[in-house]
Image 1 (cartoon, rainbow, N blue to C red):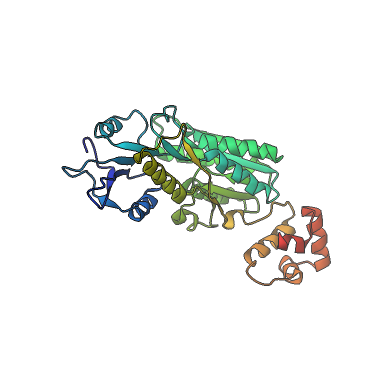
Image 2: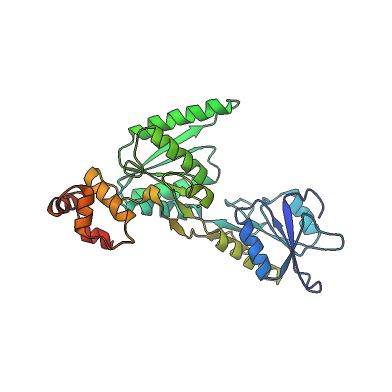
Length: 335
C-alpha cells in the first residue's frame, strides 16, 4: 500500500480467488479483537504492508475522513470502515463504528445512584478530547436522578514543565476533593487517570470508597486490578465494537449500502471492584458494616456476623441501618 504503513497490519482472505482482503489499523482500542475476528472470518494476517500483486478489497482504519491514506485506499478500489472514538462531521464519507460515550456517562451516574450517592463529581481537562460526551451523559443523568454533579477541569498551560504541571494538578485536585461534600462518587475519564486520582485521594487524607468512590472508563485490567483499592471501570465493549466493524465491512464489501450515520455501540457494563464497593452513607458504623458485607458476599453471613464486625448489637445496627439507608440489613443483603 502506498504511503506510511508502519501503523497498519493487513488481513487477506485465505483463498486467493475470493480476494476478500482487509487492511486493519494498529493502535485502535479493539486491536486484539480485530485479530480474533479476522481469524474467525478466514482473513489472513499479513505484516505491515501489502505485498506486490495484492489488492486490498476492504479496510478497518483509525484514520479520520479526509486523510490522504484513505484516498490511496479508494484508488485501489478498497472500501473502509473507521473504528474510532468520537463522531466526525464527515462520517457520511467514511462509515464508522464508535463507542457510545454518552451512554457510558449515563451508566456511571446510575451506578452511583444505585449506591445512594447524593453528590457525584467529574475531574477532567481542557481540551476535552473524547471525554466531553462522557461528561454530558453523566451530568444529565445525575441531575435526572437528583444527584448534584460537581466539575473540575485542569487547564493546560503551554510550555509548562511536566513536573510543575503534575504538581499543580495534584494540588488543585487535593484542594477541590477536600472541599466536596462527602461521600462523593468520582468519575475519571480513564483508568490511568483514576489510578492517579486514587493516589491523590490518599494524599488528601480521605478514605476510599467511604469518602470518595472512584469509577473509571476503559476497564484496562493491567491498571484497574493493580491499584489499592482496585478500580471499578466501565467496559466499553471493545469486542462488540470490533465485531460490529467487521460485520459492517463484510456487508459493504458484499454490495450493501453504508449506514447514514455512525453505528454507536453501548458499553457492556461496569466491572465493579473495591473502589465503589460501598453504599454511600455518612454513618461510619453503617459504612463499616457495608464494607464487611461487600467483602464477604460469597459467604453465608448473618446479621449477627455483621453486627459483630461493626461493633454493635444487632438491634442497634438495625436501627442505624434504617436511619441511614431507609432499609434493613437483610434487605440490603438481598439487594
